[in-house]
Image 1 (cartoon, one colour):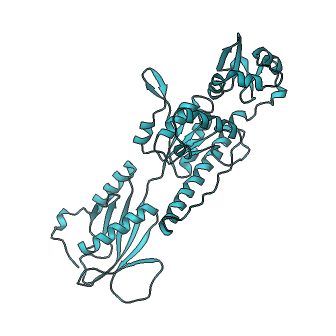
Image 2 (cartoon, rainbow, N blue to C red):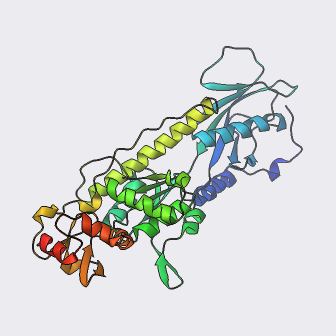
Image 3 (cartoon, rainbow, N blue to C red):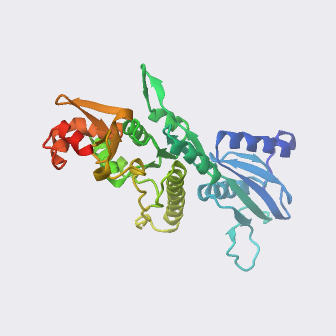
Length: 366
């Protein structure tokens, strides 16, 4: 087995490798540790020798000469891609095949033999949760508990206005975006998420609201290819009523997507490139913005029927109000307000008995 002329003084020791591991973990970078578990002479290494392979293919440490390093590096990178450990044998020795061991011929004329164990460390996907709602905070906590790296990515100051920054999501290495704005700047948050490179964007919303937001994204120039990354409702229907339950459903959607993507990647490596990969549809989450709201027909005095989604809105505390036709029209969220402003007559005329007049909507709500 070929031995490099490099002296042992230039190679990192165990403490150096541990420090490098910690730096890569802190940086959220993948790597694999390779350990020699069998070495048959003639070899230039020994049992227990270790090396660390970065995602770039750079190898630190020593687990054998140059003739084995190419195999080791490629096996380590493959292990990082799948996230699964593996055993690798590099040998020309005759013997029965072992399904649990990846076998390679020893390319060195010395005909030594090596067996190695490769343990990858792949950082958990980063989830950016957009929103300052109770459900957003709960989702962060739950996502971390099930193995994600999660952070609240709120609005940032830009030119004197608050907004969401797609570039910041990309700089952080965001894999998933969970939108839990629930009526506060929904369109801005969704646009930023879809303009980022996130693998998937999950939205806490009803089917009806999600369709309105999809149309709004088309008007903002988001193409159909990117809209395919949007998953709304965010998770399975669990009949959620509280912020904690809403967050639980959304994080369940994150878990399902994470495994679906990993399984699809594994199938893609095992199947021909033309194979079609089937994915399971995530069941819908009930409309979060309507949970606990009284039915429209049961609205009481001091409440108003939102003409866009039909939700009963408490007028005294409404944050989203439009002056139209000399009257005030109240909305549950800025998404409904924006939708109304695009075509007010369409929504006023659609309400039974409204005849397009906001004052009649007031009467119906009372």
